[in-house]
Length: 460
Ligand SMILES: Cc1cc2nc3c(=O)[nH]c(=O)nc-3n(C[C@H](O)[C@H](O)[C@H](O)COP(=O)(O)OP(=O)(O)OC[C@H]3O[C@@H](n4cnc5c(N)ncnc54)[C@H](O)[C@@H]3O)c2cc1C
Image (cartoon, rainbow, N blue to C red):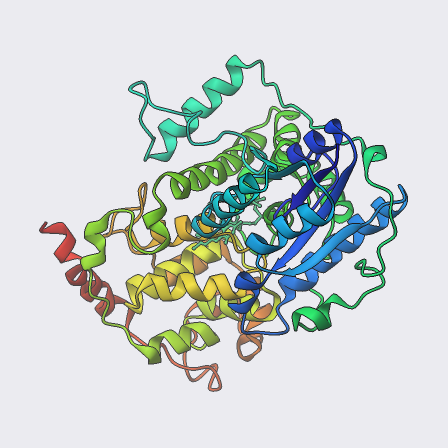
């Protein structure tokens, strides 16, 4: 019986639910499709995420070639490509892991219908999250909308299961043996898909991901103390690998529970936040287009293009914000504390609609993930399910003094300020740094404007 395993955001050969199932059923071919609908939206032909995916696929190809196999690559609409391939290869079963984004759900249901009409079995698996939406429910069987009780329930179910973390073993000897002239090691797929190789700061693939996870093992106990300081290597830096599935969520949980420290517990909480936001997107797909609390769509943001462009380019005159945005623009990465600072700054100090910031992050972040990004922006703008209250407005100066006390991170990314000492750097005077722009808006004045702007929500 011939099986197809369609890999998407799960670019690995180990602990892979769909691949394990396919291989257990017999001869299996792996396919990856460069989805034209996703690629068409990427205007930057140097998008580093494509190279990250390419590197991940190359690593997989080298591994499967050792078994005499190859991964088939296609470019186009998966709704056409998967059924076409199933017919060409006389496939009986198509397997893939579930994706909870609205576009993916719609696409997969179309693929399922087409395959059904051809008599091909289509099955999807839970793989990218530890618990799906119907597994962590309130006592009344409802969906949690607040993180802490969700997390407590998540942990309770996990404890009750005896902390079982299954491993989906993939027997690669069952891969179909064939030679593939258009394999990704020999064929220039960049040309076919219209992108240009642009290496990201982190190389794609499971080898690098597993190495980073191993390195993090010696840091996890200090996670709680160090995770908020962008100039320290206090976090795992794994998000881009997690996003593309170079690691499984179970790899992460195994790593977390092998320690008993507060640091490891806090890190596990972050993985649970990830499950939480995936569950929110799956249960309430309207969040992809607007506020979770629909009332917040009434807020009229008064900030315009001038403020948005200054934020985007890292020229707001607020050093911590500018350093973070320049870092993002140059590397595609941003520390969590800085994401919170710049997101709050955009919508609550520059008074620009959070959806513009969300979109900009979607274009730039190497680890962009719709559920986590949307959750982070809705948290910062107070429009989300379990968001900070609208009157909590981050003060960029005190955040900077607290989380970059010596100005090390700022100094690295804002060269105009590199000569300033740790005290002056957070709030530089034009006399000390004439080349650096003055603050584009007054923080205190805009704080008041922000509270007025949100009054529409308060009063309803
Ligand atoms: C405005 C905003 C936008 C964000 N956009 C994204 C995004 O597009 N993609 C993304 O993966 N994360 C996003 N995050 C969450 C978080 O900032 C990143 O996951 C984290 O900075 C990645 O660094 P790390 O791998 O070193 O994380 P660690 O601190 O080592 O955490 C381990 C993993 O847990 C997950 N995680 C951590 N924090 C969160 C969180 N708050 N929500 C969901 N998952 C989390 C990530 O997969 C992360 O790699 C966003 C946060 C904010 C405030």
